[in-house]
Image (cartoon, rainbow, N blue to C red; front, side, top):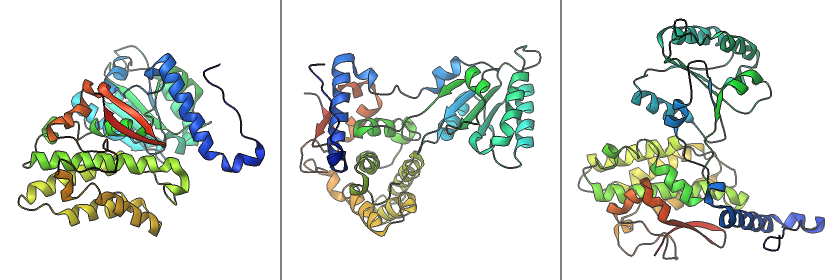
Length: 346
């Protein structure tokens, strides 16, 4: 108690207390991290392999969605790894219940994986889904042992309690801080695929610009913390924006071996992929300006920095793998005036 004292600002100053509240929050997180350990602050990595190993044919696997999260792409990649593609997938809504029932019946009989997305949009069909789950038999003669039922839903009071109690619940929380964003980006498909990461015909240029893209992705996510100072309108940028931008980056570098088409890359990334979500004209100008710091010829210079502080640098291409390995534990997440940055330990 003597190390941590929190007071509530007087009501007369609450309108000016948002900055103070942010300071209090960071202090609480730092206190918990220093006293109990970082595992109480940082969410564990999203591991579908471990979750799958704990499941069975009669255990629904439930993704609790959060804004900006899309587990389907990760699930599809995992299904390919397990030889379970194509998935039997449907986005629930009006009139989709009968189709979903046929998919589940096919999956139970033939050991396929069934994915029912957006269960919160099929409120009237949820009691039927509950009965179907109750009728799935643990007898391997009636239910194929490799059958799995995957469900995705936003938190909803109409979701069947019995399914929640009997299922395995998981959520992929949005990363907090630039460190978590960078790590998450480098663990995202296709960047995490070494054949993609090392497969460019211009490997040094690709890895440098890819780091700039991942840093840009983290920066625009973190700006939402600052309300209207970050964006006039809060936007839900997703990993899909990063995926398509990374694929385009690799393709353009491979197709244009002599000169890097910066203008085309900036246009596709800032105005099409990410910018397609941006509706405010000032926000559109901002996102294009931000990307200019990362998609530029200067990024290949050893002394180039993303900001005046020396820690804002792109690593050497050979060191980019640092963010996909256990060496990431050697990174410190430092606060400088409320900014979350990456810094290597000495």
